[in-house]
Image (tube, rainbow, N blue to C red):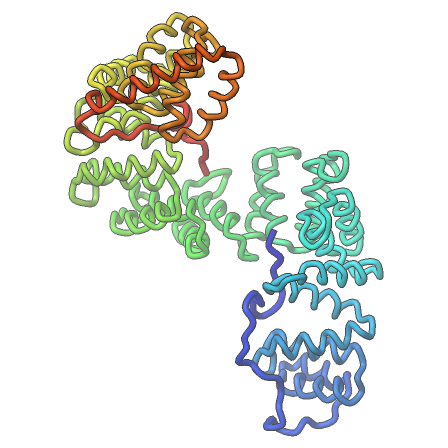
Length: 530
């Protein structure tokens, strides 16, 4: 959890040591009253505000003047920012039991790197929260939820969020909605979750407005109401919420949900979201420029937006780039670059990237572009996802050619299939003999459990010993467990067989390097999409 000083002019994670408080070189501060200071604030004369508050804080010493002067120093209003000076004045106001000063000082401490800051901040917030300060109640709830500076207690966090929500704090109302939705610190209650989400959205919190819009758009706990959803998306977008800007812009781009397609509005909102760093907005702009129609077809702009989204780890944009280079669309055809992009997309979790590589492998189009052992995980994905016979045949061909990762992956896959266990064991044995450490560990476990082979502790100990000697992180522990079940003679026999394996290992070493994946076949499948 990150606690930001929302509402202040600048973040306070790093203090500006060069800033100084108002000094004697400033124009002499004329005596002022708090009424005059407030009038100056209203007309935007922040220099007068700052000097007036300085006079009041120093001469009258009221907690209110000290708090307000500390705040303008913190924000850099009417003069340079002075964090240290601000902290000093806030401390003076805290000493006079000013709750607002305690809350603001706590936020400064939470935004700074200092030992004990979180604990002191929790004390300050607790003091202000018990006196009814809704902002302090909200921040104290966040600390209790995360366990920062206090012992984690989701029940107490909920209680403080409820108190702050009833006091009108929209951030607390949003947190309370999430707590009711998740059953976090309280019983799950969808009706209350919706009620407090509507309260936060109505109070103007952009994130709440976006989530309410999304719920109305998709029927998430409420009846679908596309027009109301559109209104809330617009409110959130106009309040600067990037996801809402993307949703609104996309609706204008494709004409969804009764929205009339509008190029200017699509560019307005997708552009705002993209400039704010929303990678899906970048992707949608790329699609718009590739497709043409509403937006003018512009491959240069499409490439630029896809590249930016790809750099932000969006797999579908990386895949789209790969397609452009593979087909020579809007750019010079470059199959090597396309394959590299498909591989990157697959690693980013984009299934289409893996399937594109598999299709090229099955068609014999990867020669000189990607080595077989690099392609194996993605062809395995095709086999697992689609039960593709051509993918299986290609993998069997690589296994027969001695590609160990193909032997391991396909062997593990067969071990999960009735009627294929014997073939799976054979592939794992071949990989183990060729030096695959994961296969050696797997084979040792098979002999321990008798899965597809006869139970054999000597063989199990042998292969686990070999895997452990090669650095497998779990093999030594499993070997020790097996060793407790064996006689001394059996252990001696297993050790002798392990030594014999290493004595002849050099003669069996492959002539080319191979990369062996240490996880199960399914681990190469995409696991996340936006």
